[in-house]
Image 1 (cartoon, rainbow, N blue to C red):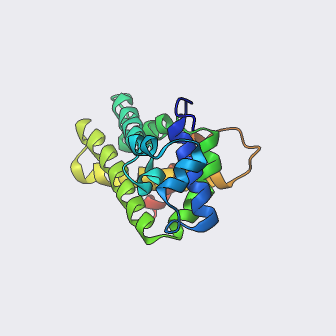
Image 2 (cartoon, rainbow, N blue to C red):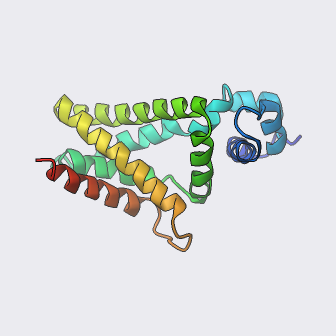
Length: 192
């Protein structure tokens, strides 16, 4: 097995998603994932602690990008404007592989209670990163929590629309996430 080839983590994620789609999460072993990716089992464990972690690969990076975008937003930006800056920053890291895997990851998560739990923890982590960045900007805690949750929902809705949408759409994820945030902003105004 060619352990020296670059991109082992990405290949492991793709292999896992393929296997989860073909035979289900529970029936898929780490050995099968490593073999499909063309790496050794020890290479798998250098990148991931277990097979659940494959579907949340990049969570730390995504959390950092969201928080950095919020932090770097202009000082005059309101909470949702700062969240929009975070969404733009995070969206810039999403490429064709993310788009291709989106629907398959969604299906794998929907078919496994264990993965649903891990996905929920990922969501909590992303919202917490945005909340902390907003609080660091001086946004009151309850407002920061609400803005972060709206940002998370906008990211998820935008990602689903982008990954499941027209493949000829070359705009990237950002316009979809920002449009979803704007829809949510309008919806909150109707809550009265």
